[in-house]
Amino acid sequence: MASIKSGWVISGLLSTVLMCAGCTTARIEFARRAETVIHAPETVAILVSAESPLEIDAVRCISESIRDARPDVCIMTLDEFRHSVFYYGYPENQDENNQYFTLLANEPVLKERILELGLRYIVSIHGGTEQQGKPLFGAIAGQGAALTWFGMAWTRQSQLEASIFDLQQVVDAGTIRSFAEGRPWFLCVGIGPICAPIGAAAFTESTACKGLGEAVATFLTGGALPESGKSINQSTE
Image 1: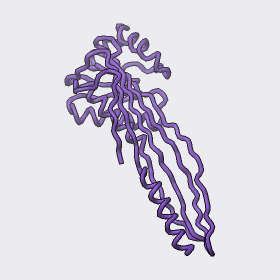
Image 2: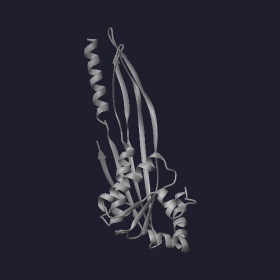
Image 3: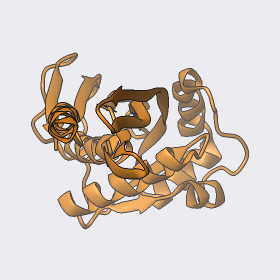
Image 4: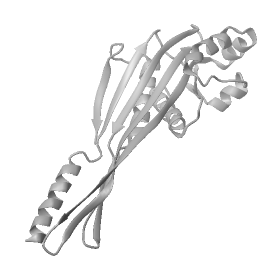
C-alpha cells in the first residue's frame, strides 16, 4: 500500500515540475531614433565596458548575425577600436556614451581616422544576469517507507542592451533591449537511500544573446521592426 501511495506522489511531483521544464520566455524591445542602413565596406564597432561573460557573448552573437545578414560588412572589436581609433577611455556609464561618441566624431584627428577606417556605427553593449533561488524539500512517511525530496528552484533573468550610435550623422540612432527569464530547478526524489535526480535548465543568457544579435542585425540592415516601444514575445522549450 505504501509503495502504491509513494508511486502516486512521485508521479504527481514529476507531472508538476515537468510542466515548466526548460521554459524560457524572451522579449525584445526597440527604440529607433534615426534611420540606419549599413553598406559595404562600412564597419561596425561592437564595444563593451564591463566585459562580463554575457557581454562578451553578446559581441559574438551580434557579429555572427550581422555577418549572416551582410557578409560584406566589417566588424571591429573593442581591442581593434582602442588600437585604431582611440585607446584611452571608454565610458562605463551608458548615459555618457552619446556625449563620448559625439566628441570622438567631431574631433578633427579622430574624425579623419574614423573616415579612413570606414567606421559607421558603434554598438555599445551593457547587460548581466540576476538569479534568486529557494530550497525545495519535503517528506511523506508511509507504512515501512518514507518518500523524500530536496533540491533548489531559481528565478533567473538575463538582460542585454545595445545602444547604436551613427558616427556619420553624429546621432544616437536607437536602443535595443533583449530580456530572457526562466526558472531552472533541480530535485532529488527518493525512497530510503535511493535518490533519483531530476531537473531542467533555463538558458536565459543564450536566449537573450541570440535575440539581441538578430535584433541588432535587423536594425542595422533596415529590416522590418515593430513599432517603437512594442515588444516581441516568444517562448523557447
